[in-house]
Image (cartoon, rainbow, N blue to C red; front, side, top):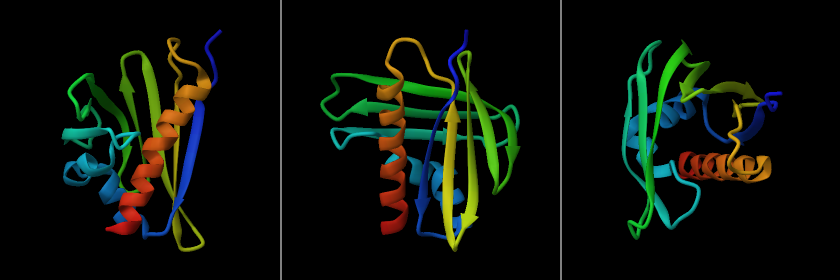
Length: 137
């Protein structure tokens, strides 16, 4: 039995266009795409179209560990939502206006190596970092 999707979200005090741009533009992605201050994202690429590739290099600042998050878009609705596939897993990201703020919701297939809680907390930490970066810049 396949586990249910993990769903996280954040309400960001910024217009939807800014939130979309900061979430999808590599010039911004490198500034928020990590869960912990001891990590960073030194490189990102994003070809935001069906069949396009998303690539983000995430690594510890002390160079002790790193990995590439590599995905391909399977659905894109510009300014609203997208779905990408990484390995045999899917993630969908949606953007919605709520009371003048923008809610970002991510639903993703869990992997089997780490607990659901660890995965949820890790992805939420990255989204929280995105919120902080977007609201402060």
